[in-house]
Image (cartoon, helix red, strand yellow):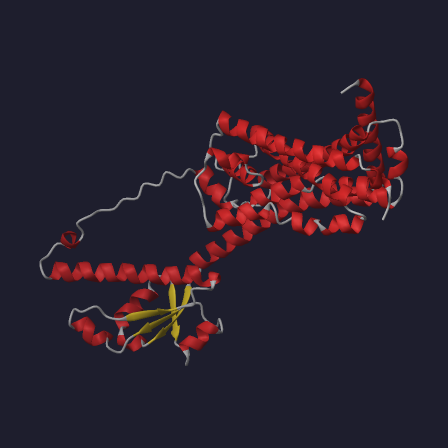
Length: 394
């Protein structure tokens, strides 16, 4: 790349940035709404989730009981375990389906006879397993009944002169190797998508206007008619979009630091050190280049700004695919995954959130694959910029 090409590239880049910052509304939306909204959205999701879980675990459990007269001891015991026993509705199944109750305990009529005979007494937990908001109350009831059953079973064995340890040949002691950082990573599992999307589409405002917009306004033809190489012109536009995207991304990470440092307590202490933020920025830099070159390719192929913008809804789904796949079907980290666009960023961000080490091989495969793909897209966009009909508006 000779000196004239570099000068043309810098001139086009500065021209695009100058034109962009003249549109203050676009700049405000891109540099304020995204960076501010994304961290606040993440904080809001975490806060709402933790508040719901803590409130359902700590507040008294409202438990309608069918056939409470058949098991007075069980009902009395539940009353001492932060459970408010309520009269059963006329139709328990309808109450669950209509969401009038989260969970209902049904005690069978044969309970007294089975209890006195030392046989397993039947109790039913009436629930709707498809309701996520009822999962915690159901788990609380299940845990309480298990505790009551074990306690009564042990007392029955002692009354017969048998040690309860006879029926417990194994003592299972779980040893959890999860670190506090890895548990925080699970809670922030949706954060990679938000960061990847922010980097992927961060330069969209510049790219679409710089190619499809100028083509529609018929201002691209005079620019292409200059002695500057078309590759330098295109590279200048891509460089401007990358700089703007990186600026938006840096502001987003800074906002994450401020929100998780000075925001309301969520019980999660996210690592917002300068080193972690730098690593996140290094992970997201290739996705900015990838998104910018892909959008340039699309904008150069589009006849108007509206057509180029119509592809945005599809592009927004691309970073979501690996997030959904990993949530439904988690897979172990393998080296080949760091060469797959969007999946590699997702895996690396989760590693950083879980405070896990990223090996040099993983960094190398990721950076080579990401920048290599960006280079391929840059070459394809350069070919489109050399077409004569590019300067012709639709």
